Image 1 (cartoon, rainbow, N blue to C red):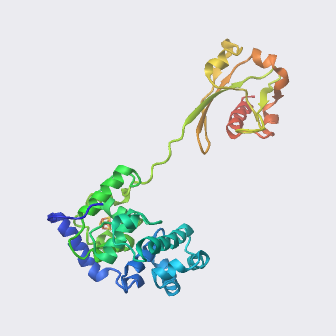
Image 2 (image 1 turned 120 degrees about the vertical axis):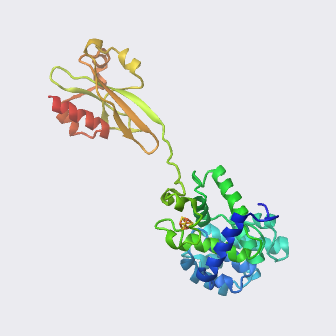
Length: 353
Ligand code: SF4
């Protein structure tokens, strides 16, 4: 975290100037933690506001403050009582950490909440953005915040591509957030950033037409607002492959095997399976009668499976391991429990008959 030193650029000056002018008219000035905006009130509100909207937090905050009006009162309370006042807000680790942090402030800082970035960050439940929010709002120090709302505003304003959860994108956003800090009115500016993100630059249907930043907002000017922030990339799942043997006897019955009880498709009937094509070819298949079927793709939660069915008229290995083979007509097979992709293959086989 760096403090804002030196002259502000023209762009920077305009951004905070425009935002503060908007905040003076449209921002939220009557939140309970703003009156008075003490370090303790700001801290409790910031913890409650993590993952939770302002309107939900307000009644909890008022009750919490009535029960624990000072940091010392919070530190002296037992955890059960603290959590009882958190009940309904969710994410109880926040309440537990707040309580532990209050006790640490008493033990380590004589009960005086630190106005120092490193000391705040060392307390349970206080991350970089929360520490910045407390220092800016309660002490007017030049620290930026980067909660979800601010990330959304900045990715749109600068048209920053890449998921904000990626470290390099997050670092860039911190750089931008710090670069925009004004020289004065840090508390109002911080609240203004939060308010703009929550009330105008919403996740869906942002009110760009009345947004004070729309003259310079890159995403708005390029008509690409809906593309920002870049969503979290979907996990790319590995793909496994297997080759399936389709072989039938003279009566049209197809050779099936029973899968082991444990593992994928446990206990279900399936076609004899080979982990690669060579293994299938070398296993005694009649090479002259081979017919390769189109690949069947199936997705599990952790991987994709590509199945390559190969039809062969005779198969030595199947004949030699007859006791492990179940011969069934396609209709009989379809009446059994079959894995979904095997069912597709056997259904096609039934149509051939
Ligand atoms: S113009 Fe639209 S996208 Fe840009 S900051 Fe304002 S509300 Fe957000």
